[in-house]
Every structure is written in C-alpha cells, then in structure tokens.
Length: 452
Image (cartoon, rainbow, N blue to C red; front, side, top):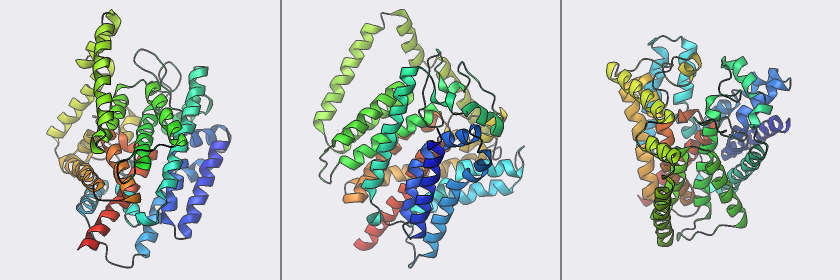
C-alpha cells in the first residue's frame, strides 16, 4: 500500500524538477499520477503512521500551480494577447475574491478562504497553462499517461468487483475523513452514501476519492482517446494500447452504476461521430438506440424494472428527488439573495457542517455563494470554451487539434456531472482540463496573431 504515497511523492519531485528546468508543462505529470491517487495517498499516510506528512502533501497541488504560474509570468518576453476567456476568468476570480474579504454570511475568514479555493482556484490553473506553448508539449506522452491511469484504475476496479469489497475499506478512507473533516462514516459499508446505490448495490471508486470522481476521470480518458487517435483528416486509428484503454473506460462506466455518467459517456461518442462525420458510427448508434428501446419495452413487462424506469423518467426515485430538492433550495436562495449568501454557504464547507444549500449542482453552488453575477461569469466561461474548441477543431492541426478535440468532448461530457455534483472538487479532472484549456487558448491567440 505504501506504493501510493511513493508514486505521489515521486510524481511531485519529477514535476518540480521539470518546472525548474524550464519545462512548465511537466506539472502535468503530477496532475496525472499524483492527483488521481490524492485521497488514497492522504488516507494511507494517515493509517500507516505518516500523519505528519499530510499537512505537507495537502497544499502541494496548489503550490505547483502557483510556482508554474509565477515562472511563466517571470519568463514572459512579450505582451500577452488576451482572449475573451481570459477576461472572463479574471473577472470571475476577482469578483469571487471580494467575497473572501467581505464578511458576508455566517462563516469566518478561514472558511470563506477554503470555499474560495474550492470554487475559484481553477482560473489560476488555467492561467498557469496560458503561458505554455502547445508546440513544446509532448501531448501524446501525457495523453498516454492518462490512459495508463485509466487502465490501472480498471485493474483495481476488477479486484473490487471480484472481492466485492471497496478498495477504500483497506486504505483508511473513513478514519482519514473523520479525523480531518469530522465526517462520520455513513451508508451500509462504513464509507459514505456515495459508495452505494439507493438499492444498496456497491459503487466502486478504484483509487479515486469517490465513485463520482472516478466516473468523471473515465469521461476524461474517453475524451483523451478521441483526441489522441484522431488524425488531422478525422481518421480514427486506435492502437492495441488504445483499445485496452477504451475497454477499460467501458468497464468502468458500466460498473459506476450511475445513470448520469453513462448518458455522458455515450453522448460523447455520439458527438464525436457527429463532429468527425463518421456516418457508420452514427448509423450504428441509431440502430443501437432503437434496439435498446425495443429491449426496454420487453423488459418493462417486469414490474420492478417498469417501476425503476418510470421513477427515473418522472424523477420520482430517491436520487433524482434528492437532486431536485437541492436544486430548488439553491434556486430559492438565489432569488432571495441575488448577490449570494456568502462563501461557504454551499458546497464543500457547508457540506462538512451539514448545512448545505443547493449543493448538488456546480452552477447553483456558485450562485448561492457568490450570487448571480458570478454564476453568469462561470456559465460564460464554459460556453465560450465550448464554442472555441468546436470552431478550432476545424482549423488546428497536430497537438493543438488533439487538445481541442479532447477539451470539446470532455466539456460536453461534463454537462450532466456539473448539474448533479460539486464538480470543481474533483482535483484530477479539474486540474488537467483547466491547465489544457489555458494551453488551448494560448494556441488560438497565437494562431490569430500569426494570421494578423
């Protein structure tokens, strides 16, 4: 088990060495190998007697981002050409920073600062990537690393399925969460309710923090496969390694036992077929959908399955009802307080204290805390990134195009998770996607400057 803290530490050291040498993209090595096992590393350090290392390990990810950003600014040799996304990022960061200073709400400065880090650190990750030239990044190398993580995660998942035991049961997950965050074990398996369905079936997280982050990581891996193996003429040529990774993502998403990630997974495949004009994939998808509908018609003759399908469609099952209740509470709070209730009133901080308001939707979490203006800025950031990545897929070549395809598909796949979870808490996918978003915007502003 000590292998996880060792991988965490080594990936940090290698990334730091790369950054010092001037290779700022080296921070991706830690984002990929370190953040995928972040919670496992923390909990194992706790139970293995290395508790003194946890305060050192916890801020490492933010420290690396700040160092990378600082070096990027220091080494800047010409005026940075700004994009709409840059202005939106800056406006969102500065606006929400005001809520740290202003004593709005029931939470103290330290809680507001913690909530700010949870909801507003991503502009700094983006900014760190903004100073990295895509032409100097061996994107194939890092994309392969992401697929290695996906395959390794599925290997752990297979162990969990065969043993019918959560990996987190052996890593001290519950003890770590109780000691540092005051979270009592919940659910039938001594972890949290996230690790099981409403019917009691186990949901596995492999070595990620929880099943929802694992599902998000699987969507990221699928987007990476599409970007990595699609050439400039839209030919899809997947190597044997890529096929293994693809099978791994399918096993993971099926075993997630969650409707939202499954919809996102197949939605990404459909969108990929559409943007790359793969008619055979679209036809297969359509025929498969028709077959699935006919199969469901056959299955709903079973009363239990019929009830499950009807409850899902009509939002009457416990999970869907829970989401709707939280959404309505959050929307009501935004109507009553359009400038927000203050940082900490929704999301991670409030969740730990058991007084969350609208904490099942990333957009509502931001709107409840910092108001409608912050929510609009956050929405515009996502809309512009989606628009730009889709547009520039048709223009860019090589590494830049691979990044554009990957980001576009991942943003599409993130829509449903953003509506149903506190998505910005999933460090692994957040740090990678926002850093690459910065590199992508750097690419298109450089292309525009060259054309001008």
